[in-house]
Image (cartoon, rainbow, N blue to C red; front, top):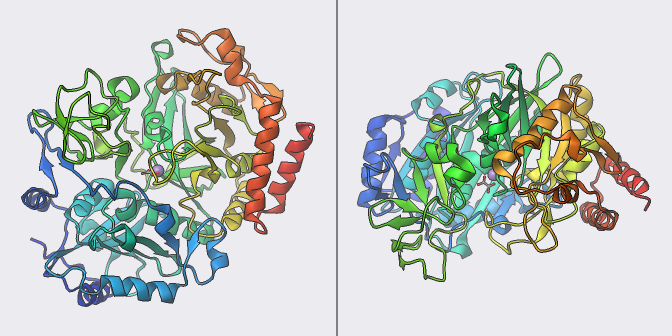
Length: 590
Ligand code: OXD
Ligand code: MN
């Protein structure tokens, strides 16, 4: 075991270099087999990295507790090391590549002494897809290896697919826990070298280098160069009772319910409608021969936020995580099961919290960390879309942007055309969540939900979007949604979850040339009678009006906020988006 070296000499040479630098006790070449997985799970438990859960209740499930100083992505220590600061742009932290390589190599020197260095080969995307990418992650964390096995198509197939050609392209990822010290924590991307180096963290988003690092930051850079899109979007299928199927892709910032939306169960009134999941976090999209946009999910699993997940909010996620799941930072019950705030049923009388301390319902602190996670193979999802492995991807009828906004943003509106849609995406904003370190609940602009993930200058990213529209002879329509609008007392106006089907149906109707709407300065907004609200509970006609309202005072503030954001990005904002801003101001009478 651990001997599965690839034949490619470029990989062997690079791994050897990292071995000389980090000086591990031994090198373990992963093959992705069941036997290897069993061995690593056993080893993880023996080392105290994992805790085996009650296998009768949760077959194949394990719990990992991260260091309490290491529970979320660290945007302030995430860097794009492009040759110039301008290429990284105004929204990224930047360091000169040679300087940063020097600093990181200094930290990595001898860092794996006494540890095993694992080499993890993986494929992102359906292997036969023209968009598929091969990566190798070197890591000294068993937790990373086991998570990568869930989240990617990991193992010998990746090495085989890379082949022996010396110039075959692959992503080089190096990760070391070092001493999990926030002072020595860096997540560095070298897009021009297809290289990622991550040190000092063991938290998923910082260390599963396939995900945010490769599939978004590096891939967005490659996508710009090669004419496709790498986006922070879920992909779902909607089948209507007459058997017609549409796919939509939706960008929401972290922890705004992408996984829930991707697995939505329609309310009883929508008998015959079916939602299927292609992906819950990332979409790679290219233009098909028919001029439509086609999306693949590069991942193989879901790394979802646990708190709030229940049979009520997301029964498909609950069914998925009944087995083969790696939990991080949830609470442990006395019968070897897991618990978190928002799970169905009563809290346990006593539990061990995410830090490993005794907990009771009277405790002041939460039992599970607000950013605790599950990692689960997507094959566990009962509503996995049958086309998930299609190398060509699925055709996208609508793109949806959305954020967590207590006010201003109506439940849904449709952009007038592609450029207006790009403007809507570029100016979208959301109240911050626990997925990244920092204050929670503040409105921040998060263009296309890519603020922390765009691997190059955001102005060029907007330009790339603007250029993509005219290349699509049959472009998707673009919408904005907000499930989080509140009333004056701070209560959510919309029930969300399954009832979001009502909004999705309207979106699909619009794509099919049906569905009424009223015109407003911000775009087409449905009137209450344009939505199918039959069987909707707890939303009065007055609440419905409040949900769909375009309030001039709120929009005056919003327009100003959008303007301030664009100012902060100057001189990079494309003229077309400044035009859109001026036109919106005109329509709002400002
Ligand atoms: C995630 C995130 O983990 O966006 O998907 O933070
Ligand atoms: Mn995400």
